[in-house]
Image (cartoon, rainbow, N blue to C red; front, side, top):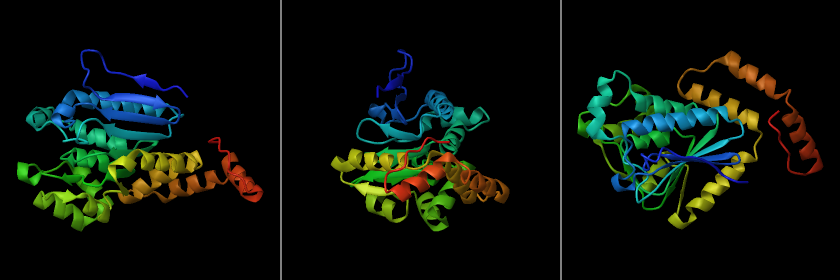
Length: 263
């Protein structure tokens, strides 16, 4: 299928790029000279892409990728003061957009990840990394009390002990520890990264679309201690009435792959 591409204006060639290929969208950070540092103006572009993808029901998986030797060095610290003076934390809003995205999100981590981008990737549903990569969160070293939703996300996804260890020591950890504490969902040699990513995408696209959306939302609510029994029960009951569940049962009986339609 032919890929569709949304490109930034010619005056901003280093802005993030969006490509759409069928059910898979890829958002790529493109500032390799600064290790894909995220500038304030990038946040509007990135949030715009997520809003566009939220409205595109054909897109079921969003991949975050980047260029150069690092995945990302995080938000531009030199402009942190100006961002704080605006009275709203757009980076927090951006990471919340990722966490709450309808589509399943995957971070393709081909190199080190630092600072705020460690939360960008943690907001994704899955993270695939490569041997030899590393990460650190230097907030305490920089005198910064991290934004609240990021702290909540780290504790809910990695546990209190791991969150304290990484935030309060600013310690750099290597790929093997990233996998051990649950920051990474898969760790592969660099040359196997794209094959591993394809495997995850294929597995996700083979699932029934509706429960991927509803179960992701419920699991996130549980993780944030915002669980609503009534909405979770309603989603369960609704799934029992879909054509997809009937198709899945028929496919099982006929020993063939199901053909889901998202209905």
